Image 1 (cartoon, rainbow, N blue to C red):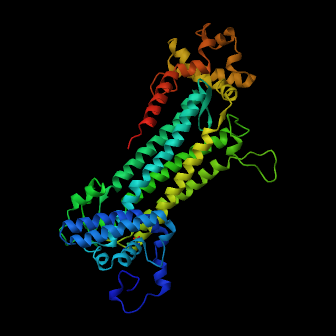
Image 2 (cartoon, rainbow, N blue to C red; image 1 turned 60 degrees about the vertical axis):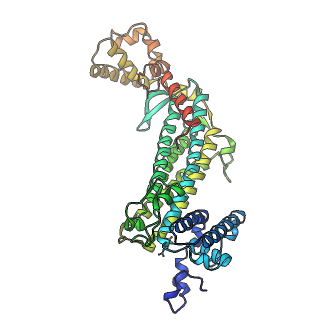
Image 3 (cartoon, rainbow, N blue to C red; image 1 turned 60 degrees about the horizontal axis):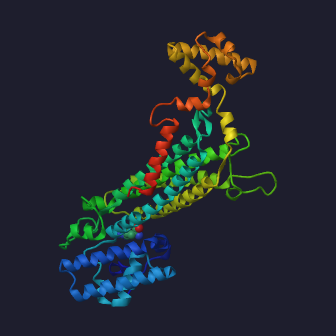
Length: 461
Ligand code: ARG
């Protein structure tokens, strides 16, 4: 028998220059276990539809089970001259059980088979990525708890804006990563539809109970249209988008900590274990892992963009172009997994220099609090903004800071400043003056941290 699944129609062997070019086995072998899972269920469905007799169904089940066990035991065995993983599994089955194995593909096409495999694959692999993201979120939560009431400046336009709790800052990254976790759940749900029963494109000609087959494989629905199903890879694109955006968030986090651990900021110290040295400059402690997370984000985004371009011109129905779905998807998965693990490791070992962050959180970034003070004395905000602007201009000219002013000096700017102004205009008072649940008020941040701990203890599916 020829090694190809489609040789009957051809009288010449394929030209290696053309055929080898189309071989996907080197990368779709990752779908081995999903391919066998799908085939086991398909054989059962055929038996229930009366297409396979009991003896053939049993032979196929036993053969596939043995193949699955051997592949799990010995991953390197999943290998050979086959065109793809589907051809490999079928060849192995026929070698084991003969003719019964040749009946497995009845009513089925590789077009739907590759779709079912990829959907099963994403369904079992996305939760692992989510666990990796939870590792980063947990590291941020631990750092937030350790930061206590430490203060730091927040930035807009990378200029000091207002004082915040260090914990509030750390939890800002956790909030973005929680959205990524959700987005991955939605990509998983999108993938969770059964395409089998679509045949090559028009639907299968056997009375297969697709609802039962979906339930058997844990899919929550059956696709709506066989033609759409044979060319639909939206679920792969949605996954690539979710992975890319998670990488974007890890990259921004990495960028923050590259800056905040620099000599210029000195807000946090990288652990020696998280840094690398220079071959030439002995003083250097480089944040390579963070830089690499930032750098690898480019490839994840490239995979999303590249795959959207692959899909955009396809005529309706399966086209071989779709084989280009797997390498970007697998690489995006690997990239996100290693990046999340590296980020969690780096964050977990950071130490905070709270005296430096605290010092940076005082001074002129309290100007908004000064304006609010005047507002509390009845001054319209616009007018208060003006008074404080003049004050800032004066302080900058004199090279002085808000904290250095005596009450008498305060009153030269406005007679409304009273004795309590020095106590009310501090970074600690500033964060306590925030009122909303999403703010940096210490109670609000504590509540968010408690929510996050509960979420980590009972992560959503
Ligand atoms: N290796 C193929 C892919 O990844 C499997 C489907 C092949 N179908 C076909 N009609 N050639 O898309």
